[in-house]
Image (cartoon, rainbow, N blue to C red):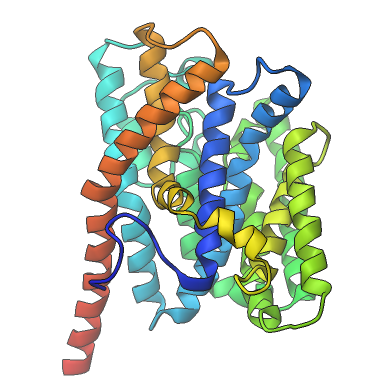
Length: 361
């Protein structure tokens, strides 16, 4: 552990996934700052693709859940590590957000105003309990991006008992179809009840299929990582091309293409097989941005909101992106070092300590 870089997360032949995290986090910042919206049709298409960065994160999360669960000693050890990975920073950002909005110094976030919620104790407790998805009025009211974190925690808890559905392609497809059908049914029912799709938009069920895609990538990677035929190279080339096209051109189904392209890359890419892919994704810059991507995701919209309120953003969309991204990376580096890394290490110590106690008893 002493050889672990101070900032960079290193995972061996899956380091390129950290680079994919960097891309996903940057995409989300792009959509919220309007990054390339001033650069014509393609610039607008690239910017609008940013909203699908969360889909990429969810596929990667499914892979990570399967990997960490199968490597853990037991469910308790697995969940301890996952919870300590995600909750401390989330709780910190939620608390900071509440303080900002209660101070009265800044305008309230868009979704809070749009859905008529308030920065009150109920809102705060719903977020701290990770149950905010049960009330769409508060689910995305504090930072504008926090809706996805309770969804991740939901699947951290619920996916391991169902993980066998991702071990084969037929089972994975079956689970995905069930979740998609359930999402459609719930969408219809909730639309009739509330007149809006927001309750399902920020619910765990609506994104469960992406987590199962991620689980399937874990088992498929184990199966295909030593294949020596040319088929993996073809699949990798198709995935990269599809990913680029989905970023640059606006069309229906881009979210699905980006998610599937990400899945294919996770299944097939290895340094030996596709160095032309792993090399750019594992530069120190990409590994650095990927390592702090969780902080980037949670912090950037707060930075954008505050700078907008105090009129400190450039007029151009690209200028806004550069300023927000630069400040966010600086803050994210600090939160990673002060909060994320120590709590991750604390999670490991908790698991190791619990295992030693069981051995002694």
